[in-house]
Image 1 (cartoon, helix red, strand yellow):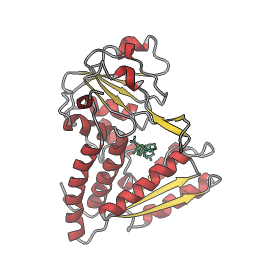
Image 2 (cartoon, protein in one colour):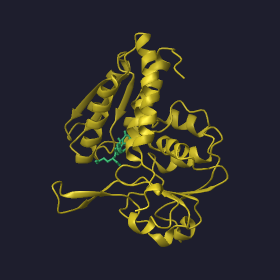
Image 3 (cartoon, helix red, strand yellow):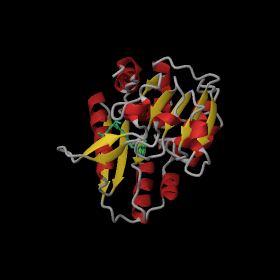
Image 4 (tube, helix red, strand yellow):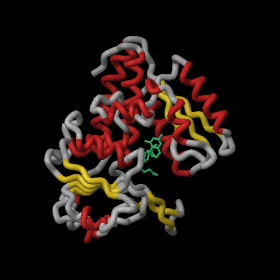
Length: 297
Ligand SMILES: Nc1nc2c(c(=O)[nH]1)N[C@@H](CN(C=O)c1ccc(C(=O)N[C@@H](CCC(=O)O)C(=O)O)cc1)CN2
């Protein structure tokens, strides 16, 4: 294993947590205890893991947090009512609805209901618009975490060709925005490919930076990657295995065969994943500070 090629998330997340602690100190000195409320509807096993990690991280940092776990049969009206209550509650600064939601609930309606000033995910259309305009309120957690990783590992993006596989609202679309922008200083040339792209490998082979975020286990094979490319794997897929958990985590990249060709590659687990929660903590402080007109940056 060529260890120097591994772009691990933990050291970068720890660097962010250092900044979070400094910013939290300023808020606490002003009498503000930032509070994140996470809503989980249903019992998706992976979501339960992520939500519990969010709560534990808040506790570890000394932030306030609350997880509201609702049954899978919760109606859309009930969920909207709860969000309305949290919007009006001044002690809650950040609201996050864990995705995916059960299929009977319209995700767009729910995200639209969250007060955009409390939207720590950057999923509300107002905040998506601000992001696209280059004047973000907060940055979307996973894409912002990837930008932080590229900076930390001193990977040049300016003028490079970044190819993103996947066009989701959580990763693909905001990632394209961040990488192309002047505001993020990334200044890359960006191509987005997806399930309907014809001759997809022709595009991925042009990538200096390849971001795999389509949610298909080990989809990216060695012959789809240019020699010397930086490969960012955003996929987290559970693959059946004969171990204690009954599964192993694999990314969207066939890691073992892509590793020899890549100049740098994020592992799964331990790559991009830890950055999502680190950036969420950062965003929670940002919204708490803005709601109280306190400068922490
Ligand atoms: N409202 C949101 N919903 C979802 C988001 C989001 O940003 N906001 N992103 C994902 C899930 N997610 C956070 O919510 C998340 C995913 C992965 C990790 C992580 O630490 N992954 C670890 C492995 C974790 C494991 O053992 O299963 C890793 O890759 O090393 C954290 C958060 C979808 N929903």
